[in-house]
Length: 254
Image 1: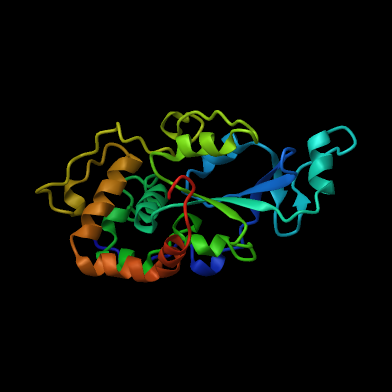
Image 2: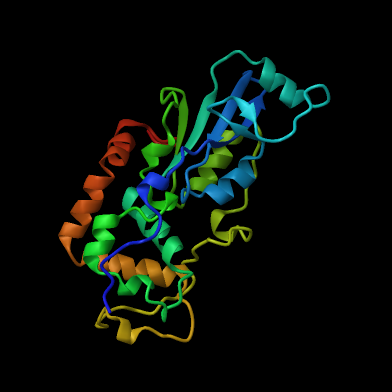
């Protein structure tokens, strides 16, 4: 049975994300604030960036801090220079595929709400299924975009973060692909069921186990690129994300 109605998370459910982490660089007397955007290597980045859990909009710490005993907290509070934001952006379609897969993969194939029972019309008209598929620009309201170090969420992200952090915090992160604490990590080493010459209908689904996220991504990608109108809808919906990407210079690029 083809499902034509999305009854889950709605765009109106979004509450402005204030999640960020703050660190201080004594050399330049600069506060750096990493702003979390879901599905942009966020679990990996917030672990490796370190620092203090912080609400960059209210300028309040979201954890107990003791400036009288911690010199970094004291430096953060006393700093009067404008902060510099650290933001990771991702290709909008790549992020949508990953975000939608995270929403869908925990639903077992025998469930009527399994995403392969959703029509193309439902998927590519709804587009946003939770915060993981929201436009990235929605997380950046009230951010001074002239005070940002931009990173692109690509295979070079680890190397770029290491290079940028030298002389500041000297971050030595594990490669994102090896980050075991991220339960939503999508491994390209998992070989998904190939979709070539397989009808995209519920009767070919293996009902014995849930799909992996990689299998969900491959199925969504197959459906997305099988119709240019689907791609057009996504690009139009995420047009502000594309405009932002075109307007900025990523760290490590000329």
